[in-house]
Image 1 (tube, rainbow, N blue to C red):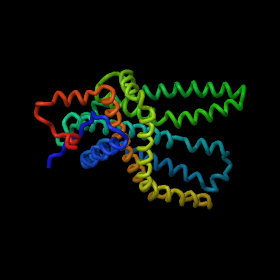
Image 2: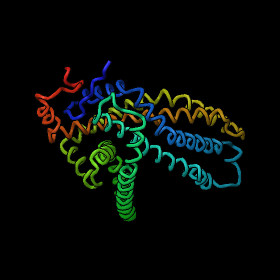
Image 3: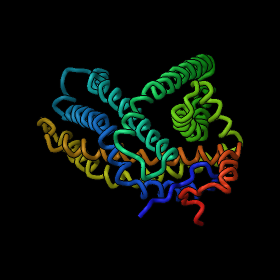
Image 4: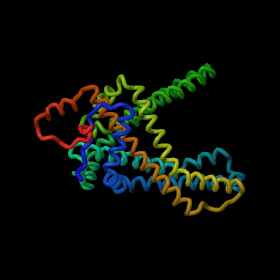
Length: 323
């Protein structure tokens, strides 16, 4: 049976955005997750293994024997953020970038050719071509974020040194502000990858196009991204529960004074659970992609113009045209 192509450039409301994302995943389930597992999967697996070793290292420091040694508490805190933590962070960043690259490469090929034409080789080739685009967005965003954080922290420290109460108030307002602006910012970053990869424009142009799409749709984006995040977190709970339960048992035994090394079984459970939860976050990028195309269509109406131009030509299979 021929699969009907989903129209990306169509204005959608909250429910329609979630429905079309689920429809896309169901329609392309086999090939989509094959690409994730075989292309991004090795990097996600390395991240999961690094995370398991880091958690193992952290748990091993919970024994009463080690806590009661001559090493002070500050050294214990430093040990929590040693080389195992650094490797974990680096591996997580690489896995995240490969994940977003694979998801959007798949969506771009789907939008160009339809579901029947997608192959693993084509997706992997697209991923390789887009490594530079993904790195440019990541490095630019990271540099900008660090610069903004340095300025904010400097302002808070300067004010706190003079008026401590005002400094505490600023920190409180900053936390509230992050709760408001962080979801749309995270969506903007995700959509920037898609725009850069899809159109091959500069980082600044990608930011401008994404920002223009967000203008006037801030709260709408906030609701969609928070709703998607909650849904993914609930789904991830099933994968994270075995690891959390196992970890609580190990920490309890450490507080009882056990000095045994963390078992290999915990490393396996932690690796498998982390791999599954990380892979599931690909759904967030799919929803971000459809939301961007929806906002872009509301702004420029190119999708409608393309469908008007197609009148009188050979029709293409489009799932949206059958409803």
